[in-house]
Image (cartoon, rainbow, N blue to C red; front, side):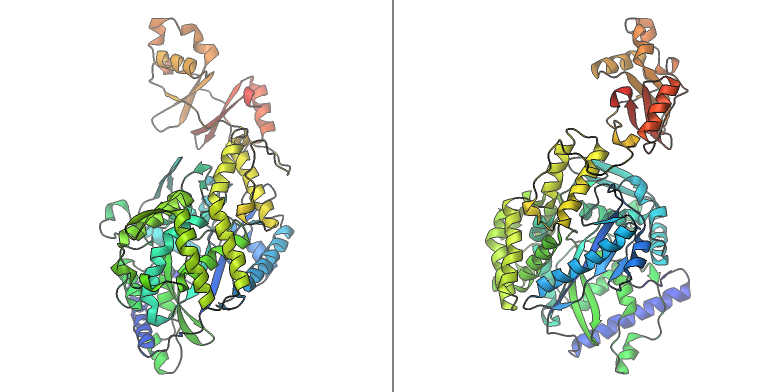
Length: 616
């Protein structure tokens, strides 16, 4: 979606014009390939860095456009969430010290972003999913106020005709019904690009698919979403569901999500991949087109294939085929979209070098891998890596092999040979690939985050633990330490920043509730069993409608006749409540004013937590 001037496809005339341009783009690409016009050498690499913006308490801060204006650099662009930005790094020829040059440019541009952010009381954090994100940050009001994002949101919602039902099950479980594509804004990645010789493109693409699982397993860095511990790389599950145009009743009509790994090996031509995308997924948006691409070729111009790239920008394969024009020459590349941001810039460059090295170092025994490996094994390996990270096991050559063994014994040697064959600096190769090896022997990003978070939860409530976690991610990144050297956080760690604590910092979310028709006998025993002094009462819509206090009902414990009556007869209906964003000081005053020892926390009448005098 690099083109900002897009509109929704609604009129018949617009649709016809857009599809005509799309078909002409395919024809033009076929012509350029058949005439040998696509650049074969030199091979170049490139990358895109997405990052999060937080305030001084490490909560998301929605001032991306202000920071972007202060930065004033064409390398930077917006993302769908107004708490994210993206850096487009320059392409570098794959040779010599290209990776350290890329790293140097990345650090220079990030420093620019940090300086600009400081002027707006903000900080920059690299992480696959920002731990402190909450439901309130993913509403349409936090969408970057630019036309293309609202157009895309409207188009996908219109295609679905129903809300997004997000369900991800890991150690914890997330069930969420949401009404916009803003969930996509939770994901931040480090997208690596590798230019591919068109003569070997299909075989290279299949190889990229085959190695995706093992590469991802060492790079995982996104285990948390809204405080829940889900997959090692939760982005994979979340992104798939957050822009899914398929309504549940139409799953048979469109079998593949717009975000997908694919269903089969590629066996045709390069344009067949684009044709498959066009056939499976209807265009959502359009733009202005001056003339068709075939006519441009006939006039000696190199077309940018605007319609094709616009459509391609709304189909999110984890390994995506991209067409571009650089220095007047057309080229093809593979975009690796599954590697997350962070934990440090060194780790990101190491991830990219590892992937590029394995791509260009493919041994002869893996030529035409689609003939020897079942595609479903490659797909299964990918999702196993997303779920379990370095704990994943892969099926390879008919055997089951652990992530660690496969990386150390198979893929790292391939990467070293591949980089050597391209003339990449041995010093750079040794430096960055050693970071991968150290990660295998110690821990990766998702391991550090989950272990640290579990430790913090022993002494902190969820929200505070997430802020401490994010603060330490920021501090360690700022020192540019690679993840394998990060010490896991201890349970007694405190914040180093000052903040006005709010109800969500201390409220209990693991709460029991009863229905108004439940018997008092059941409730009395529940309160005894669980040592509960206050029991919220909810109706069929899950709205809070009353409260039972132990002091009010304990006298009925041994009164059989009374205890068989329903809760409605005993509950207090006039319940004083608060919100999770009320300050603790205000909540305490409220409880003192009304002389109550329990304060239910609600959001749109729904019970989400509870605080008692004990929590202070």
